[in-house]
Figure 1: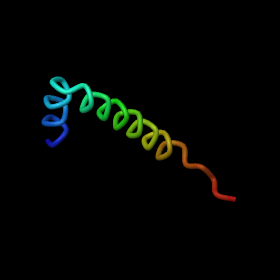
Figure 2: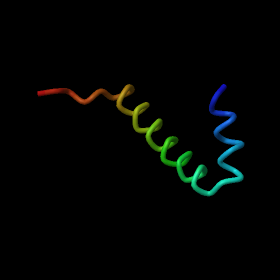
Figure 3: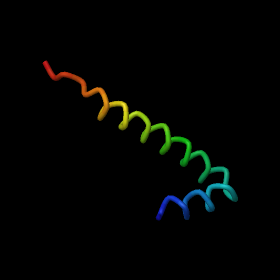
Amino acid sequence: MDSDVLIRDGRGHPAGHQFLQLLQAYSEEVARQIDHPVQAQ
């Protein structure tokens, strides 16, 4: 998967690692939204 490449790349490059952390946080937030959809008023 592409994520494997990103993880290897991120280990060698601080900027890449920082991006990975942001991407992971975003993915977790998306997962929460899917699990608990916000009710649109």
